[in-house]
Image (cartoon, rainbow, N blue to C red; front, side, top):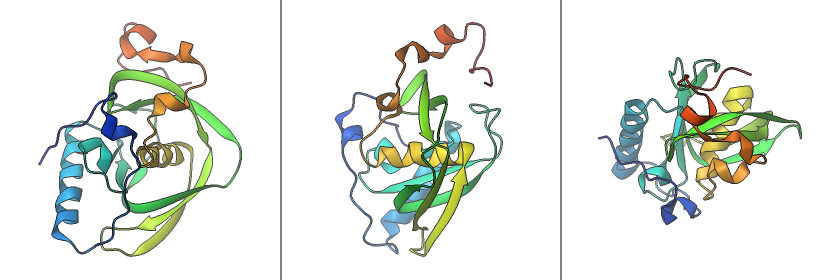
Length: 177
């Protein structure tokens, strides 16, 4: 089922989400199905449970070809529950980000270039991966939602934040930099 995505300004987006405690629960499987449907419907690269009003530490992400991110590399379809994210370098990369909870806007956001993330899959099996580039950016963006952080809170230069049509006249998306 496609769910309504909360928008910036809704106080529920600013709260720290609770950990998942029961992995076999039917409610968790229904939540994941709704998150997949909602993300696909909106052509998102990822979605966090708090974005649809469920305060649990659950994110999904994956990018094969996404019209919202035409220059991005592929990111494996992933369910990540109760995640931890560890920077593997202090090197930061800046790039344009958007968010389903901040529609029509883009911002220039710094993120760690290379990370390790760990957590549990939908069945409660632990796993971890190393990610870099766009993959690392997506993971950090989605996991920020679990701590009540929206990408505009990370922007350093607000001359590089605004409505897509004002920042990039005549273009639907930012040019590749």
